[in-house]
Image (cartoon, rainbow, N blue to C red; front, side, top):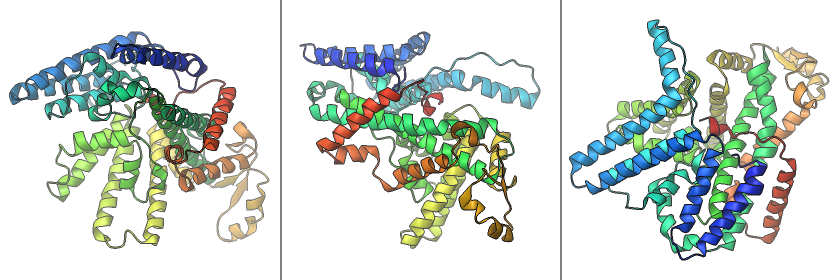
Length: 497
């Protein structure tokens, strides 16, 4: 079930909220939690009912293992091996459904074996709820988790706003909220804030991210022999498509949580404002970055065992972070490229430590960071390594500088540019001529996206800091307009991970 669909907006969400409020007014303390668990099961089963049993079994096994670990906390031997078993079981689950065909394909390629790919369906959200439960087991072993009922643990895992595409919530961030009396009280402030933030996220998805989707498909999946401007246009379109798609989902998830008085952690904090690649990863997919840091990078040794181990730990963490996104060498190389970026980032800061906070350094830092992120997104989005290579060559000008016909701003400078060695070619079948006809519309939307992402507060900051009635009215109007423009709802990009 998609957040941007009529069945969710007009049926599932209002019905769930009304039943939840009715349950909150009963004398049974766990009844509201039961309603949310039941609604979340329906939400997940709407996509594919057979996988609801898989996530249910996963919840039951991890809950029991968590209890075993906590009951044997003083017996470190039993607790440790129970934790190892639980983590291994979760990794096997995600490994089979998500990576079995990928690993077998590569093994058969290397050793020349004969093997046919299996038809394995990927359960929606498995990367998120598996990592979430791994973190829970580790926290149980560290003595950081308290004892809660199975129904509370089930809601911790399956709560529908964050189930499919995060954030990857931690035990201490959300579980205690399920037993607080304040959670079940009607809060008009949370209701208004939640609807406002949800509406802004919906606008991002419908009117910006989905608009870019047409051009991204044209460049990455259809066009050939891309010129400099076409390749860069496609790369920038995807750069902002994934930005507004993922930030839109993150806003909607937090907004939905507020409707039920549950605070989900911020997962997206204006990452394109970053002036370094390390800052980018503190702002982009915050819950994943935190998980990789706390449960992989630090256990590997972090930066405590010398420079060589620090850099190797960074690379291993980023390679596995890339692989987490999907069973493809593109994702692995994307993670490795970001690992290299982090190497350069830390090395630069070590050499030029005194100059990194100057205004010029910040401007240069932002420009180099944004450029590096755009280049990496090409690997992330391209359907194959060969296709990524073609697009990157186009971005380097290998196929020339082709422009759409009658592009007056550049045509007027044609002679001067040709004197500089840059030969412009104007052709009728330009890549972006199909979806929108008006080529300047591409530049207009891109310019608007740049301004929004760099010059304004993000939507979370806007909603929280602007408590005027006028702003809420604007958000309500945006929500109504969005409902009118929903045609064929598209999945969020992070659903595929």
